[in-house]
Image 1: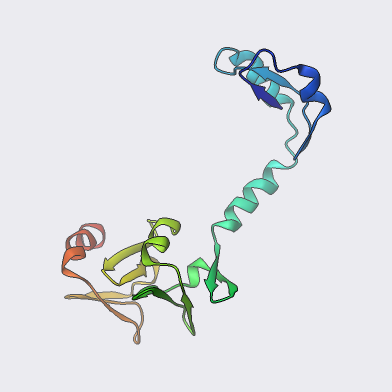
Image 2: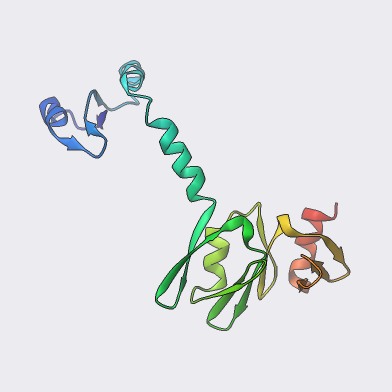
Amino acid sequence: MCVSRWPNFPKQYAQTRRFSSGRARSFVLSPENNLVFFVKAISKMPTKNIGQVSEKLENSKKEIFIKSGYEHIKVIIDNIFYIKSDADYTEIFLADKKHLSSEPLRYWLENLDNNQFMRIHKSYIINTFKIEKVASNQVFLNEKMIIPIGRAFKESFAERFLK
């Protein structure tokens, strides 16, 4: 489907050009003005690839590549326990190993799911799905992983988890 808001855009151009998904089967001019034609054009689109696209989107959110030196290491997001900031670097802690990344902590805050990851200290982001218990100013992710809760983040943490 080819959508354009310019009436001078020739229909032949849209039908003869190769797009990433093949040839355009429909041409719609300004969908907000031609809603009926837009709906008809969408109904003509093949649906065989829609499942593949949604599956790729779901998989892309389950994994992330960590730039570590000259390497890019694939890590499953659910396996991350916490991320610790160390000056110009961040350490990504998994159950059995850790990776050093040159990305700042704010990069991870912007690129990870806010429902799953939360900043609880100026130097720590935790995977909230891995919390086992909370005691005073500490979060226990397992027996060996104890993360402090910073004073500036304690109230927002308590609102979210200790209601």
